[in-house]
Length: 75
Image (tube, rainbow, N blue to C red; front, side):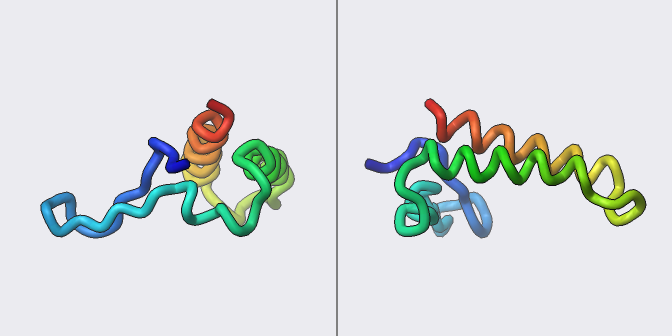
């Protein structure tokens, strides 16, 4: 089953390549829930990043993106 959540690569025109998100991970994780749990751990790990390594804005952007993916996987 393909997920409705997809990533597009390249320009958004008729030559756009669409990669379904589920196809990127189907061999690595048993289920979307398992991948969501791994990504949740990744979000938690971001709280322990050493100060000054990344800007707060960059970290917020990563967390926001991960949370959106996690929410989609749990649908």
